Length: 346
Image (cartoon, rainbow, N blue to C red; front, side, top):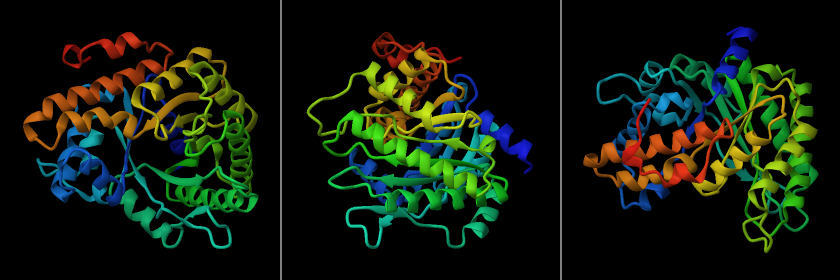
């Protein structure tokens, strides 16, 4: 894939009114999701559930791409097509999670570094053959007593840059995800400080690794109060602080920013995205790459029962539509008060 193709794919992933579904839960994570609704995490159940999401009528009006897990990229739909072919037939771009997870960072108690660079070049070649057109790598930064350290931030920034360079070499658009976790007692000001330091380190490493910024996307956290902080910032403050931090650290050449939800409720994550787009005045598309915030109500509506397929797809369509509206700053509480069953699919 040429540089022009990388840029074109990146821009397509942040097309107006659209965003990305993160359906790349690892085996342990999807098991937790299924346990919450009393469903066994078998390969067949995982395939059925994800096919349910991918074949929702009208969802492609709001979903530009889907991040897949290794298993999912290799699975076949009920009609014999690969799930990547199912997505492409809906006009949705398939992507792939390629990191091996966050592991303890030696010498840095309480901090993590993401692994998975070994053999990544060969895995990229296979993933592209299987239909993937973009990739994702998540780094995890924890705020706590005397952390994060500069050593932790630097180690994760370097890994993100190497991952991104290898992705572009293989013709895949890299989504760069440095997540500053919500967990903790920290204030919104502390989150802003740590996120700024993290983004500055990441973009320095990306430049030194000769990554073509126009052919990447950024998947950051929003600037939030820690979950356990006694003072919780409101929607408008979160939106303003997030835009302020991003303007100070993210190059204008980046086509788009696809926020992670990071444990926020579906409604709150959408409200924050909406408020940012209502403010506007930024050089990048402000979009979403939500996992749980797009899927939580869908999982509950499905409950592991095939007869609930229609209700589950209606729930997914509703959340996708709400986030599509937030891309324009047009989301409102009234959309949540509308019964899912009354949705008219465009």
